[in-house]
Image 1 (cartoon, helix red, strand yellow):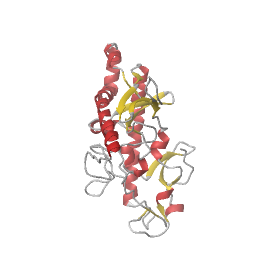
Image 2 (image 1 turned 120 degrees about the vertical axis):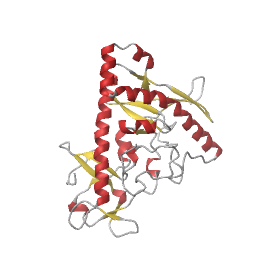
Image 3 (image 1 turned 45 degrees about the vertical axis):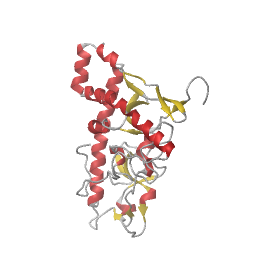
Image 4 (image 1 turned 135 degrees about the horizontal axis):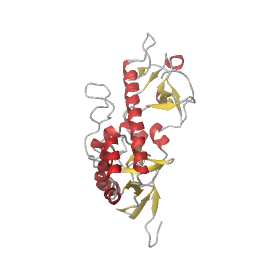
Length: 288
């Protein structure tokens, strides 16, 4: 994965409607310019770690994967958004387009859980024309000279550095989880269990209706045949259903953060934590 290549990438009687859907590719990469990590280009260059989450300040949604749902549902609203002919599972992070209420002005994260999609920024995986997944980095995080805190991409032997190798492993695991999550979302669509979630939220400036979000229809689950329920159970889709339904109540967090912003009060669910590393200084996909 370190070869060259090109990566792809209101007023009145009715409340105002704000479509908060953000293209998932924008959420994953967060930048207009990324490049494939390769020995030919980056052997003598360095990269800088992200100092906070300001890069995600415009993400009103963020993709979620199966492995992180048990932790995410404890603090984040979870929904589905249309993605091509199916749906994608996302955390809802704002009540307006391009506004992430979970990112503080100083880049600190204001919720109790940090989505896995953000944990190895500025790195990401992108597919080349042949469909191969390649490790990429935001060009804004590349350092041409030795700067304080800058790290090497490669060892003198030509191998990826230990830090970049661990990030690549994390990204590969995340990619596998994402594909499994997409398959389950397609299964839920097959059984017609996903319906629009026209959410109306009271804000300091009045009621706001969010368009573009979807949820599981609990009533339709009760009407499924035993065969359909077994298919969902065997595929592991029931856990996704329960997590999404339970996490809907977390929308109150966003309302509270918006009210606090209006009052210029700073509330944070836990101390600032970049979320990239374990206490030992290494990446982990365990316990997400």
